[in-house]
Length: 534
Image (spheres, rainbow, N blue to C red):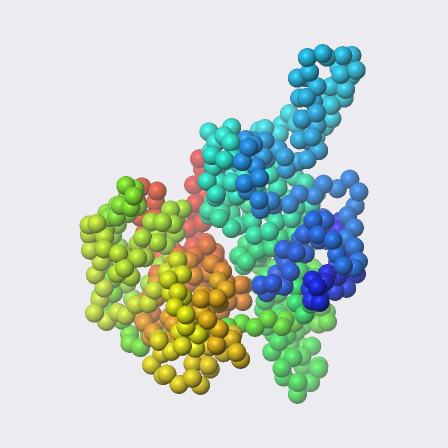
């Protein structure tokens, strides 16, 4: 158990949060959410002891082993993959190191023999003899093949290093696991493996993530950092989101009777608790939700941008035909004889580990790149707008935000552009900031605004959720669901793909594609079944 008592943290004159009292217990997974800059990662560092609080303290039961996902990949370059994972279980690794050091001594005394025997016994108790097998299974589950297990970390790619460090955090099933954005850079199969691991895990998990589907799948509770406070709520992310939206709505309707508010909230709790949950902790979660009182329901100060797309004309019968497209970049064949057609109402997710191939396909579709061979033919009724993965060139000019937006608006009036930017959370003097100094998330919101002003009936998105907070991702999700035109997009956000796409085009390692008319959940289920069958 972790007990947080009267915890507070100040950064200079700024109070990040204050008077936090929470208990984290075994068998539960706590999703930590909050706006960008609210202090999610900082809170994990306070729990781990990496940071000291301004006031209060964090208490952890004695003899409890805590492990955290490390972010400094290069630190382990001089170690092998197996050793890096083993280091995640500090007591076991220290025992092994001490034991091996004794055996390497040239003069081996009787005292050394007694000490070695004690260490051998401790090594066995800590599961040392099964460790290599357990590590191997974890690494394979995360997509690190056996030939890489003896390699040095310096020989691995960035994505592979992330997986090894994740295995290190999970190895030996510590009592407490702290995970900061664990699904970043993970492929589909690795995320599914991680979800399965956490659902079976009996300890305590605290996880920071922008992946709403992941939070819904593994979390039993939500820890919300808002209003300078940290509060704990029962349920997964969807329950927190829906209930917070309802609370916000009811709080604005001050003329409503208190009894009506309570009645509505109680009906919401009853209805939600009856829903079937994807999580294996569904039964206990349902019981907890049924015991909630209105006072325990969340309210949020977060602001959500408004994202909505509307095509100026309806697409005709012929939308898009891609025929025998091939493309080689730096002597690597990224696309090999790729062909597909786009029909009315199609919203297609491009997925696959080779993101360079997907980006290349988008550049060809956006007519920014000519294919080596093959043809892309757009219908005469289509108009397209494109969100590139690398959009730094869009913000190189020294323009203010309002002048930058004016380039793409038929209505040049400052009042109109201010109103439009206000819906995207740019207000007051924000509109006079130079676009070159905007944050990553602000630039994405600018590009979304540009696309909304275009009136296009076909939208092309290459990783639009990168740099966005959960509020903006939810807004984009709603906008794409409501859009009546065609969408081709690539993203790592599971929920966005599941709720928007009615078709999946998978880019395979050999440069070909596999076109499947199904939901993303159906696709993932097929992948999972194929892995289990092997």
